[in-house]
Image (cartoon, rainbow, N blue to C red):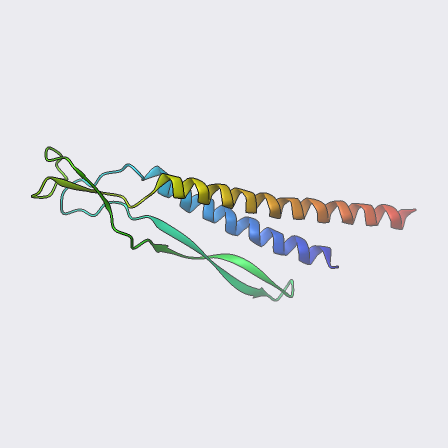
Length: 136
């Protein structure tokens, strides 16, 4: 097995999951934000995607963080007639971010990141042991 190829593939996974965690963190940070006025749109949840590409240098398929798209689910609303962002009915539109979903997504991204990191550590140990065997 080509250890450098394995490390390169796992490193692409690290970069992709790191980008995914950044997007999820932004969603969590904006979960309770309110628009400034009734005409303004609240924060819309972002959803990271992944893409696959051929890395010619590694001669392997690697993963990249793809396009970050906006979630089209409806906004949450709350009745707060005194809020400056309330519409004529007294409803305030809130971000379509569900903290439970974001927490689960973050946990999954962390575990994927850890799995890629473990792959790199294992490949490095195997390289080191191979060198030790060749020295003997």
